[in-house]
Length: 286
Image (cartoon, rainbow, N blue to C red; front, side, top):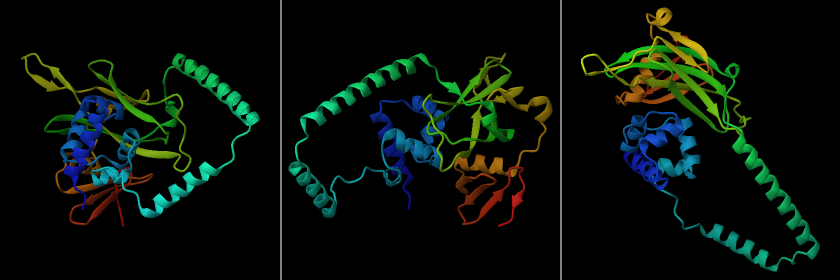
């Protein structure tokens, strides 16, 4: 059985090793600091896509995160024997000729120069947004919770090796959501397109009485395209899968897993049952 408390402690230790705050880690992965807190307290688990990115970021295996500890440094005897043989082979290998050394030295020099030039060019070139036509928004809804309004967006993008979801509010009425990738990002060919869920939790704003209320937006854009408008969409019926995802995020104890696929979403429940929906919110037969 997965020990979420142990996993949370492990994730906290990994973050501390990086000397990052919860807010800094949340910004890097495009989530709220509260989500990071929930991971580290063992209340929730990161979704699979973020779990893979965390493993890459912390330079650990997925299994190490799930086990909540690093692998043992004691190797199996067969592995030790193999490494010993490799070391013996390296010791008996013939010395490299002078000419080969010269060639390798020249190649190394050219590579070093190329890296320096490339790095200089990289510093001169900014990060850039994923092109709008590369993003497909399947659904966007606003729903209300005890904590205030939240905005749910189901979207697909090319599956880049490095991608970050950034949120920014231009003014009091408009929420602008952007997906960014680094300069040297490349598409993962095995799974060229991936589908994601993004939930934006509104921040605090002061009201006239000195108290604080959750802010409310008139318009939401995603990759510079309008995806939700209060005049057009505020009375839209929120699909069942949005509320199921909210239960999953809030760790109600009922929804234990959430699956996002190319043409459906699925909630797995603690009693062993599951429900699938298409993107239009219709339940799908098993």
